[in-house]
Image 1: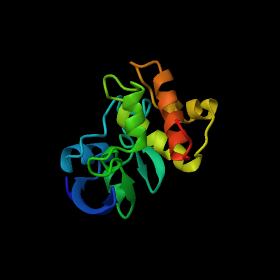
Image 2: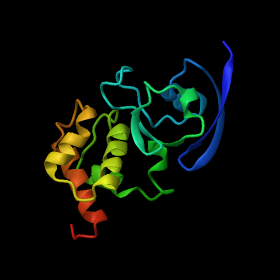
Image 3: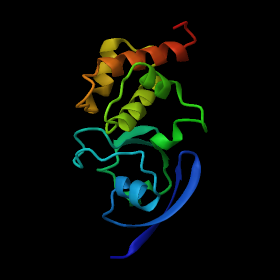
Length: 160
């Protein structure tokens, strides 16, 4: 099979890669670009573990072809922290013990960040609804919801 040349932005950096037309963005990120933070949970778009943003829209990278990234802006979990400084959501996930095995965590964080970019003051119900496409088999969700709401509060400048 012939490979296609793709030029894109990933986490704010210009990136070029070659991929087969059938390769998913998840495969390209992990296998070609060695950005292994994005996880594969189900491979069918049902669990949300592989969530990234493409042009600020959440997508399951297991269902998005690598060639479709041409000219797009992609954000992965690797782009969330600024150097050694964790994003507030990452810090709050740690503080609230909102992670265990780690498979869902990258997708959950990307989804939570997208929520807070669109709605800086979500209710618990809105947060649960927004994250409903991301499945966690370990935490029971309460810690995740509390972490997101606490991060939202801090981002708004309120006292914790």
